[in-house]
Image 1 (tube, helix red, strand yellow):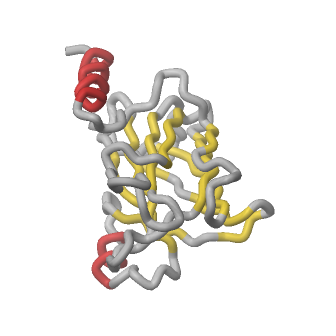
Image 2: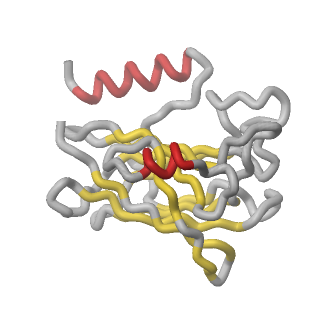
Length: 179
């Protein structure tokens, strides 16, 4: 079955199930705004480049990101992570770069989960990469998460926040492996 047909089926099944699609539109931009200026929370800009195993940038990679609001909620009413309010779709540019502007998410209420941003990264001929970034200094990052983050294909990436002119800055480069 052709990849476009498979992706269309995946998109249709996720839409029919009430879940947000996990693949960016073919013409999605490489830079997006997820949280409006009115959204409460610390401003955050995330940038990065997607590389192959040889370190070459990959153009046209689908990146789907989503996260909670500053209170740790995906939606105001039922907190449904299948259809989060703060989400975005991008495709990497010619140099494999992407960027999104949002707010720093909050930790889930009444839990010890660190604040995080979910990533789903997909490109034809490469293994899908699903992980979440957590932020250095979060009191809920435990030894298990730190140990797991050391693995190349970890479900966690611990990122340092830097001070930017318009809020916090986070750099998240991504390496994809061929299928």
